Image (cartoon, rainbow, N blue to C red; front, top):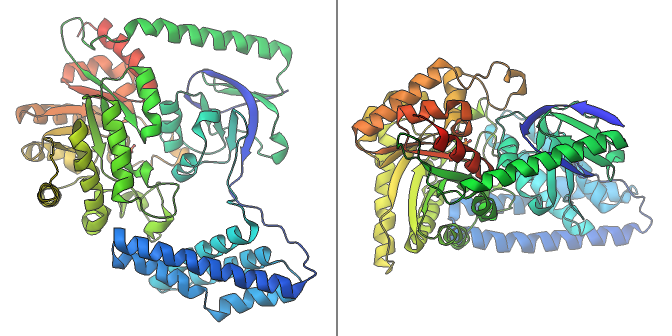
Length: 537
Ligand code: PEP
Ligand code: MG
């Protein structure tokens, strides 16, 4: 038996087969005997890739705009670039297969581009990698993606948000990663999915782990590989205890979240996509307090269309049957990277081009989302909120864009319901001027994950800083009080949707501050309702 430990990000006990998630697609060299045939296969793959890119170009131009479509055109040009194609053909002539040759030349050229001084040329490295990946997929007929043939435990070095969305959530019993932090999106996902998970573990990741039995104890932060009988039996008991506790919480279903002295709180849930609705229904949330729209953009090769977004939002709104759904517009950038956005590498991504900043610069992307959200408002009760706000100017611009969208949709015959417009308070700037901002919006929702990161100047993704990261810091508590007071003075509601909302040691404090809404991972709802109902505040 191997025993190890890590930092638990969600409690519970999982027992299952290991699936090792490996990031890099392994392209092994195969010796090629029929060189002419291999060159023909490569040239055919180029023709297929051109065809695929043509379709993508037209779709992007139609749905997003000419400027974005040009990026696809640039990729197409590489397929006619002799330096690139002849380099690959030369390698095939020297006896390597086409996929391996494409991988090698693609990587070499991408790193050459990445080293250039010119920012535009530097950014072309991602295009070469992308086009090489496309050719390799055509040549090998494989997506190269990670597949789970049965339920099991995902063991990984780390998982980016776009990697987590590509996983088959139905089959995941637990996550165990070597890296990550308690505030990373993988940790947030584990809490949404209600599965025990450990980050920052000491596990040696090796393909030989695949298929072996693992136990993850999310209470103690331990994992066991090939457990002995004694460990298995004691963990089965612990698992039974956790299930019994969950059953006890059933007594809090379908009840109002109201404290002993009559303070009522709207107890909502945070989700990433319609797939998470089953956790919301299971958790008995009273609404959705944060739909992280960016998850609809991750794990894809191009932008979702207005129709795709509308379908996703409509599903959420309809499933919630008239309960409030707060949809946050795209918060891409920083840790949530998407290749097709072609975002340049930044020195300080958390302080960079992200969230509302991208939306206000790339109006077509913004308007596509807003149109989809407003159209979904015909099917229930929708609020929109905007991330990373720092100024009144941004709110004014957002409101103008919303007004344009409403006008367009009404002219098209849509029958829109009233939609509240709110902002996330997740920068110290927004918290400090919350008295001014409150006069312009319908509600505030505090993003304590980012508010803590920016107030304490601590990167939430950096595992080395976990011991410095004090989410109960006096500065955060004071800001939370200021925000709630300023909201109420202006007559608007205030909620918290960052991870702190689910911290039961602060529930009384939040009730005293007068927060009207707490939005937490679906799995935390019943536990938090119990705490509110038992609170004397
Ligand atoms: C936050 O910052 O607290 C928040 C809810 O947004 P996200 O975690 O998606 O950045
Ligand atoms: Mg945030």
